[in-house]
Image (spheres, rainbow, N blue to C red):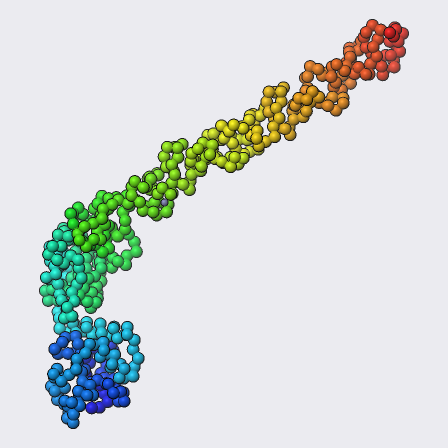
Amino acid sequence: MDNYLKCSSLVAEFFRSEIGIDSKDGEWFILDKDHPEYLNFIDESKDEPGMLSFHTRGSMAKYLIGELASYDQLYNPKHRIRSKPGKVFRRIYACSGRDISSNEIADIVRKWEQFINLTEVVYVFDVVQGEDIRKSYLVSNSYVTREGKRMGSCMSGEDDQEYLDLYVDNPQIALGILKVGDKVAARSLVWNDEWYDRIYGCDNFACDRLERYLQEKGLKNIRQASHEIAIKLDCVEYDYYPYIDTLYRLDMDKSMACNYYPYGHEVRTCRETNGSYEENSLYECTECGYEGNEDDMYCIDGDMYCSECCCYSDYYEEYIIRTEARWSECMNTYLHEDDATYCVDRDDYTHNDRAVRLFDGEYADNEDSELVELYNGDYALSDIHDLTFMDYKSDYALTEDVIELYDGEFALQKDCVELFDGSWALDGDDDVVECFDGIYMLECDTVETYNGLIASREDCEQLFDGSWALNRDPIVEMDDIDEVKYA
Ligand SMILES: [Zn+2]
């Protein structure tokens, strides 16, 4: 035995085509001669398909010692040791001093299994419709691998076949299949001759081959579509439904199969394996995305909102969007922000129609009990602003605009005159007179002189006849004296 690992032409072809390691004349890795457990003359097991068989140093010694073994002797299954391919591949790599991970081993095993299948079966691809879809699901028509594996499906039993009516009846739905002989080894729904769906197969190899076939036909993987897809169907109304992988929301109102929830429509969700379905009619909150039944949702301007995102307004007698709502304490209702005026003094809102502009540019509710109309038509709040009542106008004014009169009343300064002593009186007060010299005085403090002048009593002398004369005008005084006799 030389230091080359030898293998059958089948195994050599596997390594050449699938692993990319070329071997010449069945020779492969150079073996580590010091390794006690190396194996050689590797072949596919003849009596257990998929397994590998080989010789160890021991079995070689037992059956073939001292001889150049013939091909028949070497590959006679009776003399050979059988093992799972994973174990064998691991040992091959170990014997040749190479490290390899479990994942790499698993990958090689998978390739080996595919390789074995490929070498002995004929694959047929097809896209079928109608009753052929039902046939392709039947368990009795599905291919079984040598390892006993077949396609998984919840709809392969005889009793389940009526679940498939949706697929059978609608021409928009077809089934891509991969057959081994006359048995189905892999299948995939095809929608609208545009999309292929999840692929079911007896093994990865079958799935890969069918997917490659569907892609070569120009179909796209519907499970990788990032956008909303809805396929219009002829009929969606059934008693039973299949478990649908991708377009499992049936919009009963629009007769469509969707990969999204068609909010606001009657929806049947087909994700049950027993033919049943879930029926509901959900709405999505426009604001927060919450999904709720119609009873939990409120329609505002054609959009749906959850109870968190809207609020009832007694004013409009309908719901409004919460982010656009302003609570009015004075009206005890929510108002839409467009209709609401902020009243800064009350930290409250009122309806625009009830808002009264105050003298300072702020607003108040027109039913505010403290709202006062001032003498000039301005408004103020009596508990906020400093106001003074003016008897002569029977109205209020801002305190800063009024002055106190000599008699304790209040009036606007512009309506007043200043008296000689610095106190104030209303212009036009019957008790106030303007003296000849322009000074205002209370009438009771003045006299009218003989010559018709109004003057302060203190500035005058009373004449004998009871009339008055200014005492500060000496000329007038002298003339008068001649005729006057003091009492
Ligand atoms: Zn919401």
